[in-house]
Image (tube, rainbow, N blue to C red):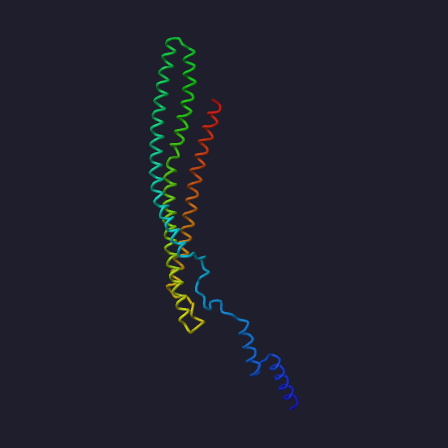
Length: 239
């Protein structure tokens, strides 16, 4: 009997200590609820990717379309430049051939001084022809740049169009939230909302990749242009 009494008293003591009685349970639930929040409560995806105003989106869209149009013009100018280099190289090679013929004539006539002067002139002309050949050698990189510019412009347009769809979805979510009596689900995204945001995130990624390739094309072209100019400058100063 005494042992049973001790067990009952011990059980009650533990129950009171852990708050397992009816009153204690209610108090514990209330306190725990106050410390817990639902991170998805009234969550409408506004912070998934920084949003722009509708005006800014439309402004950037106009620029992106100009970028695509500009890539066509750039390619046309690149083609014109290539033809110009090709023409100048042909002219330069003809000039060198003419000077070679004059060297032979000077040698036949015994005019050694004239022959030497013409040889120096030929050397300068060959340096110029060599520079033109190097320019012609990386002419294909102009096309690479034009293509990269076109792709990045189109990727930009796709991203901005996806951004417009996301903005529309966010507006709809706001309207749903205002008309809802259930605060817990008022701003919860629908399946279509999530689909639109996923498409937007993918478009942002594609645009970033296109910009990276565009940058590489610019670096490749400018790097080779600097090499040609530096080489040409060194030889010109020596002359």
